[in-house]
Length: 108
Length: 119
Image (tube, rainbow over the protein chains, first blue to last red):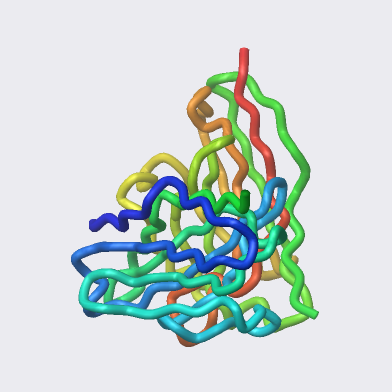
């Protein structure tokens, strides 16, 4: 199995840009997906296939990939974006998936 | 509209057995993989495993292999997660989720089932 590493927390002020990274050895070969989870709610996918925005997700959310690190970028952060964000990937045949440890985004 | 509706919260004692369910509607249940994710209160998401209702093909996380049983009942469009002997460390919210048909991510999620194991 492999691991995905995320920073535990990121803090930004409203209107600024938040960047949340996810690193792992397999990420140069496998796609990464990003989920947003607000307190008391189930996760929601915001980005799939490294950089595709899920339906209904605001344009301020974007994803990028470089080597073994992928980045979720939230431009012009709003208070409503405060949440936990998880990256997720899978092995080549989909038989084993892994989540990153999660990053708590705080909008201060 | 795709919906995954999970069974209600459970409170159990250590050593007891438990089966929780996830009922799918609004789509052809047998054509999409259904997975389970654990979230210990205040902690992150953990992928447990996934099952294809069409033929019950199942894949487990090495961390959960042998600890839980994942199954389906096609007659009622439900997936199940089962324990034979619960431990206090099984206390968590358990989510079911439907996999995207072409990619390895969860497109739709259930509301979660809180399982509390305490003596």
